[in-house]
Image (cartoon, rainbow, N blue to C red; front, side):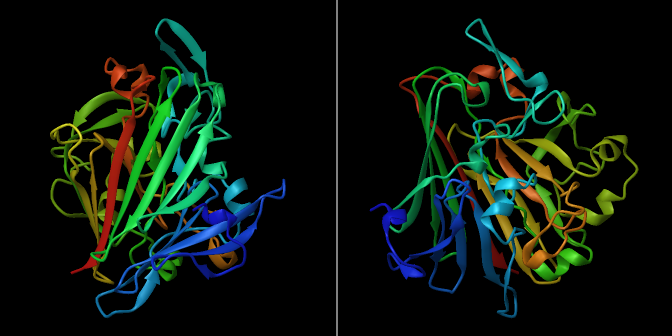
Length: 364
C-alpha cells in the first residue's frame, strides 16, 4: 500500500505506523509525516521529504520523554536549509574533491555546492527529493528515482530506504540501490543527536556527552575537509577507543580541530566480515542517562560535532548554537571515489548497493 495515497490526517495506517499531512512543496505536492512506535511508547517520526528522520522521542532514566533529534518546524525549512537535518544523503554522502571523478576512463563533473567541492549529493541531493512511501511488515519503506545526470552523475538510480523500529529501542535503516550504468553510491543519514533533549541545545549542547568509537585511525583533512592522509588516533584528541567527554576534547589544542571548528572527520572502523553489522560507536549523556549505540556494516563513520549550527533556525523558531547536536554518519570514506579503492563504491548494473545502520537508544 502506498501510504501517501491515503486520505485524511493523523490516520493510523497499521498498528505500527501513523500518517499525517505536514504541508506542501512549491509545486503543490503534499508532504507527510509517518510515525513508528514500539510497545514502550518510543516514537520515531519520518518525512517523505528527503526520507528525513524528523524526531525521536525516547525516555530518560526517570521515564521522562524528550525529542533527542534536532530539526526544523516546517517542510519549507527542510527544503531551503543547509544543515541537512536528518535527511537521507545521496547519491554521494560527504565530499568529492573538486567535484570530479573518473570512472571507466570517463571523467565526470559534479555539482559544486561547497566551494570547489561536491557535498552531500549537491544542491538537488536526495535530502530534497520527495520520496514515495509504503508500509511493509511494520516497516516504513521509501523509494526515490534519481535520473541519469542527477547532479552530474552517470546512470539512473533507484534508491530505497527501510526504517524499522523494534521494541528494544533500535531504529534500523537499511539502504538499497540499483543502477542502469556504473555510478558511485554512498548513502547515509544526517541526523543530529542531543541525548539531553531539545532544552539542552540552548546551553552546553553535546559538550557533556561521552563517546567511544571503535576505530584505531581516522582521516586527516585539508582546509576544504578533503581527506589527505590516514592517521592513528593514539595519543591525540581523536582517540575515542575508550569513553571520553566531547567537551574536553573540543578544547584540546590541535590544528586539525581548529581547522574544522571541532570534529568533522571520518573514522576508519575496525575491519569485520563483509556485510556484517558490528558496533561502531556508543554515545552517552550522563545528565539523562540515555545511551545511543551505533552499529553498521559500513567501513567509515563520520563524527561531526555540529560545528556550523550557530544561527541555524530550529524547532519552535529557536536558534541553535554551535555544538547543539552531533552526527554519526556511517558510510564510505569521503572522496573514496578518487582513492585507490574506488571500486568498492561503484555500483554497476546487475549489482545491489546495500548498507545497514542501526541506532539503538536505551538508558544506563
